Amino acid sequence: MASSSITLTQLRAFVEAAKAGSFTAAADTLEMTQPSISELVRKLEDNYELPLFVRGGRQLRLTAAGDELLVWARRIFDAVDGADQSMRDLRGLVSGTASFGVLRNASYYLLSDLAQRFHREYPGVQIRLIGQNSVEVAAAVRSGELEAGLAVLPINDEGLVVTPLLRDETLWASADGSRTTSPITIGQITEVPLVLYDAHYGWSDPTRRQLAERAAAAGVRLVPEIEVENVEAALELVARGVGETLVAGAVARGSGFPAGISTTPFAEPIFDTIALIRREKTTLSPVTQRLADMATEMLLGSNAEWASPGELPEGD
Image (cartoon, rainbow, N blue to C red; front, side):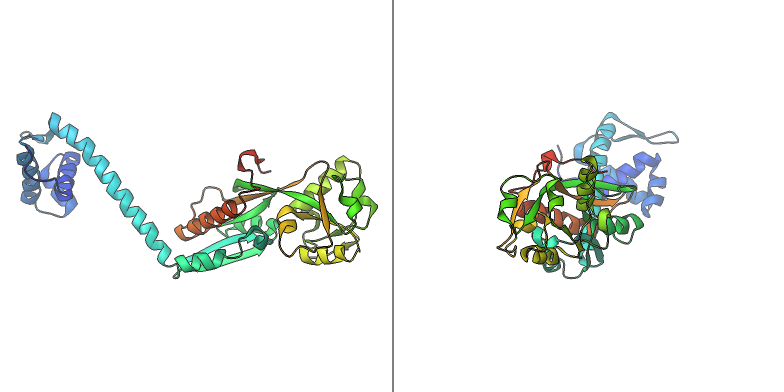
């Protein structure tokens, strides 16, 4: 009957001796003396009153008990190695830099406090949160400038791993309430001046790209009369009656959405699908992985009432 517990040192000596076939070779590997290795194994055998090796000949051979112990010993050291790696990964969260691309309209998806929350939990880590158009986020992740980011689909996903997280319906916005009493068609949006944002990327912007594809399918050509860079500027023009625009549902639900503007869905629905993206064949650094996990948790948790992960379309 065992009189004491197995120690990791004893198991390590046993495993190395079994692997090398001799106490001398095991001693060289572990930088110990041959008598020390022999004594560690002998204590194991005495403890259980079972021989672990057949001595004699030029090489040690495992007994049935030795074979059984070796299986468990390997499992133990796999777990120890895993624990060691886990602690080293967590140590990486003490310092380093996390680089992550966020949606230009991140505040509407309740991500505005991401930096504050991450810094509070990991004060030693430097954070690079870059908010820009999804086209630019995808390009920066593909080039390695950013490790990962959130983007609205569709994007050019060549060289990227795309994980859809949720989708948000795109709505039509107008200061004329009579225009939003029922879902709007592509043909109807050509009846008034068109105001669009994300002027820099134009029809490359994922949401505008979907609108353009719908218009092309309907045989309609869309020409914006006014283009601005951000959605707030576009909504200000709409509120003044200058024209109409499209907005993400999250924007329409925001507390700052102009009171004089009403919205309606498209007759053929359009959705902004938000996805987590990273480069293919790469592993995120521990700090960026944690930042990506936190952003995902916040995005899904805060917007759970309208997120539909199970029905998400694939990327391009």
